[in-house]
Image (cartoon, rainbow, N blue to C red; front, side, top):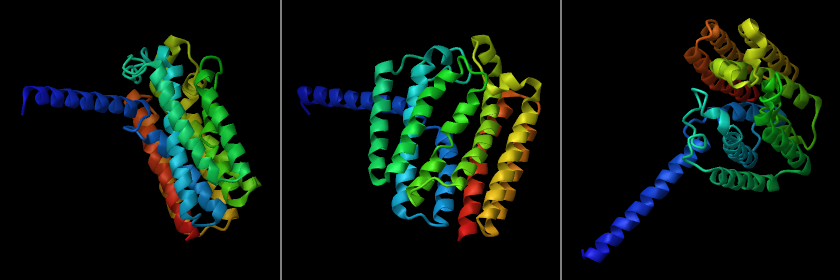
Length: 301
């Protein structure tokens, strides 16, 4: 190989490595390396799809909601990191986030969020008008959420609404309307989000106090463990009543029992309020959500 060709090959290799490095940073920005948030959003949405369709909702709707959930969650992570960039650097858990460290610029992060949100918007073309309006409402709540921790004592309540909006969207997409069961399922899911996001807030409690931020862990104080347990109990009781009212088969009971066991395990983990244990409890909620979804699939089957 000639010297010129060799330099060209080296330059091309360097360019490819640069692009690969940027892609890795964008993966961290959108949490592709940590899909827990997407799963916590996806399981109740898919559960609602099965409830609304009373079984298999069809491959088209399933693909739309899986893709839309992943795209919007990823876009939301990028927006959240821009909004929280001045706080993240001072919180142990978030200090290495790519916007806070300057590895990804604000403009880059916003561009990534815009591309992902636009791709998510394209999925709405295959949904009916009611589902599209519901999606816009979900987008508005999600965009506002990062700012509530600055002044609102219970920002987890806002996240509880944002992370439950996939439920009415699913019912609207399948049934073309929003019935009472969609509302009750949203309320049930709200309490589950309150439980696991309070566990998440318990990890950052000391840092949040120092930064003057608000959270349910700070508001609840020494009652935090009891409040988490209470939220789990409300969620599990309400989702069981909904399943019973809809005549879901015995398979749901098996999934529900596993989910209840997960909830008990989480409360045991957080009872001493240790950071690592609280974070493990939060992460483990993906299995609780999967258990309810799997039980729903089995019950309707």
